[in-house]
Length: 459
Image 1 (cartoon, rainbow, N blue to C red):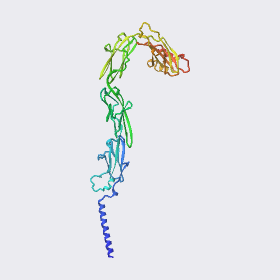
Image 2 (image 1 turned 180 degrees about the horizontal axis):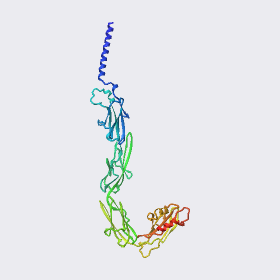
Image 3 (image 1 turned 90 degrees about the horizontal axis):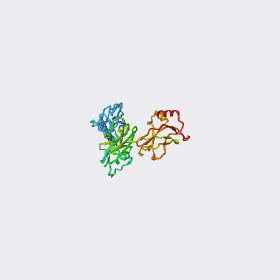
Image 4 (image 1 turned 45 degrees about the horizontal axis):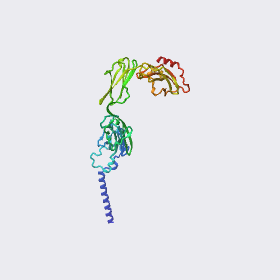
């Protein structure tokens, strides 16, 4: 009996000591049940977005009276409620709002209980996960070409850089094409691919054209590509590019003549016309200027307009000039026969004749015709203005057949003709009216009364 009493006393002593130890621990440790758990919505450890995307994520607490805050990847607390990246508070929720994501937003964003991490040395490390929650924001940047200029130029004989400023995250792989053909830049003595463009050594006119800068990337989560085409112009001094210009031309008083001056240059050159060494004055001329040519149109009113016409071409890299001698010629005789020879469903073959001119040199003889034509509908729409008519030139050396093709079937056409020689055009003939029709004979169709009246008024 005494032994049993001793054993029971020892058990009671041990139980009391254990209770005291447990009570001491409970007084110095934060209970797990009182820790405020946090949850993110969406609850993925990492989230991927592109630059300029919008995005919102919520930090939710079980206990609605718990105060939370967001820290950015640099450890700074986000407290602003407006701006590109801001917070929005609701009961039990703290939203982190990205109105427009930027590359600077990359990294770990953390939601934590307010006051956590401010020197509380007694917190239980086993429950730290319940005081904060993080996610990693991954930011991709769509492919773009920044301030890349689509028209670039370089001087002939120098090395060139075709600039292409490719932007993107992750960085894309860049390749180049010239006029649609792939450029091999590996071990090339001509081309070298650099981070900001394509380097070309000793450029010439043969290097001018379209260069395509193509960017491509493939990642575990997506793939994309984009490209930009750049026109490369090679700067050079002017040179003639149309060598068929006649240096001696003819006109007649009362007629008109066009003198052309065509030259290539980069930058595009300026064009200046002189008559007998002086500027051209008066109202009897017009100058039509394009990037690579200038046409002087003269209405010859008297003999003083004949003489030497000089075209001067210049750009910052050089200049050149050409003299065209304009001489008095004979006015050509108009067609004495102008009629329909053969009719097709979509064409006319015309019979045009003019007798040989007398008292003129062989070079002033007629060498062809010009036919102007338009449909009856076009004639009425333009109120008989023949400047809107289509034209077709014929020369004798191409044969004696004069065919106007590509016409509409079952359509009435108004036509007129003029002879051509080196001095220009003759007076226009009277207006003829012919009609295409699949089932008709080759004879001219009867004149519609209203079309004939218009033709007589505007002939």
